[in-house]
Amino acid sequence: MEQAILWILAAGALVGGLDLLIGNRFGLGERFEEGFKLLGPTALSMAGILCLAPLLSNAFRVTIAPLLQNLHLDPAMLGGILAIDMGGYQMAVDLAQSPDVERYAGILVASTLGCTISFTIPMSIGMMQNGDSDDFFRGILIGLCVLPVALILGGLISGMALGTVLVQTLPTLVLSLALIAGLRFIPQKMLKGFSIFAALIRWLSIIGLTLGAVQYISGFTFIPGLAPIGDAMQVVSGIGIVMLGSLPAAELLRRALAKPLKQMGRRFGLNDISLAAILIGFVSVTPALAMVKDMDHRGKTMNAAFLVCAASTLASHLGYTLSVERSMMIPLLLTKLIGGILGVAFTLLLVKRPKAKN
Image: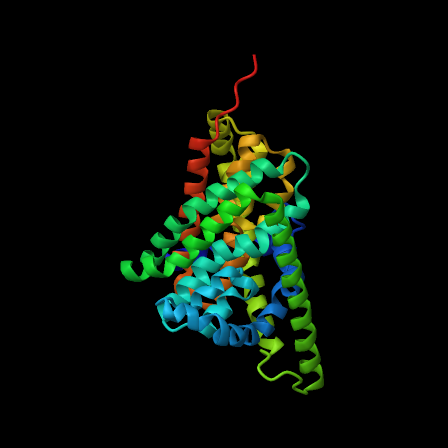
């Protein structure tokens, strides 16, 4: 199955590149080119954090890690508070006591909970219009509720023992419950906190990128322990290469499913934008967030619940995983897909279908 997915991505790169050569006649060359153009924004958002990751890990190692060890928890779980491609994986690697938990925290937890905390929620705050936030953050709550289930199943799929998965998922469960309570009872303060956290991540990324560039150009080590920027850019390049194939492949999938999704929309009372955003969010979260304003109320909630687990699966998260831990590709895809489907299913159960107009 793993090799089949890789061949599909390779085929996506092939047809996208060929279409670009003949003038983007089928609209796939544009997606191929977009994958390359995303290299710049991707590097700006994550390369600096990757440079700083060893320093952050050292700070956590002498502060928070001993407390987790006393609770029989692997410090690698601290990596789960950051997105997989924003330092979460690297932090898990640096702090891990067990290779299994390293992969679980750095790939599965960081690509779901970490992405939600450090990217999806902060990004959505700046893009939400008046009247959108209530429906959207109701969906975030639903997604956080189903997240532990998806992670436990993903851990088992990756080969971890049930007891280990349950114990190591406790921090994620506690943090999810805390986020649910905060978004439910003090939403404005929580959103302000997420905005501050997002600004901090951006500042750290720029600082790390600057320091890494200066050390690379000058050849002088200003800060011992700073990861070489060349290593960070190698990871970014790997993500970009995967997106050359994943974006055209996702476009073909969207076209193939357009008619079934339209029929599904009529059945469940969802507009076309709401359903299209599901497929787009599975590739990249930012364009999906830009579509929220055009969704119906049920669609806003459904998409938010889906994005908690499934955001950016086929672009940056898959690309990053293939760059650093190729054996985790199937667990990553299944965890994010299971969580996303559960989020959608619970939304359809909990949020009433709009009444038909006479």
